[in-house]
Length: 181
Image (cartoon, rainbow, N blue to C red; front, side):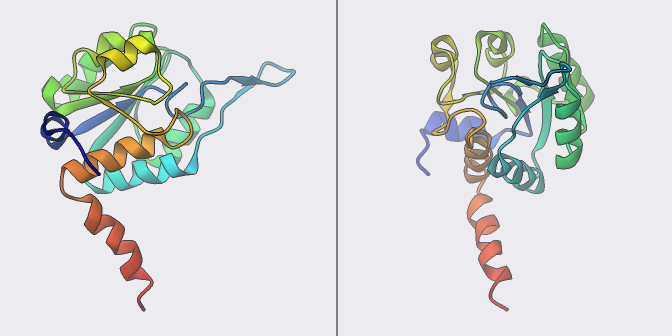
């Protein structure tokens, strides 16, 4: 994986990756049944990438503008307990995470896709955008994923961070070693 020196330097410092949900962990479409029950589709590649990143020592959090039981369930499934839903303004949740985890902005990455993510993206050490993000978000991102939101973009970001921190190759090789028996 080829990274610019600036992105590699920023990524090496990251201890927390914050994700938006709609348009990042999902493709951004909202599904409602006849009773108004919302559902979302999450990509399994993203989920495994998030588990790999956690195993690599990087904490993860969610800050999303919507409130959804589906998000709560999926994050519990992935072992992510730092979940802030219903955050119209995402900055208070971001600052609470900095304080709670005793981190500086340089140790935090944020992954977003729309203009509502910019107030936090412009404050973190590493701003990541999905390939299909709004043009203003792409303009302010330090790094852009190869994949679209909900289609492997989170996996791209997780692997990029693991690569920059020198952990990805050994982690991937461990899967091959498991099959050597």
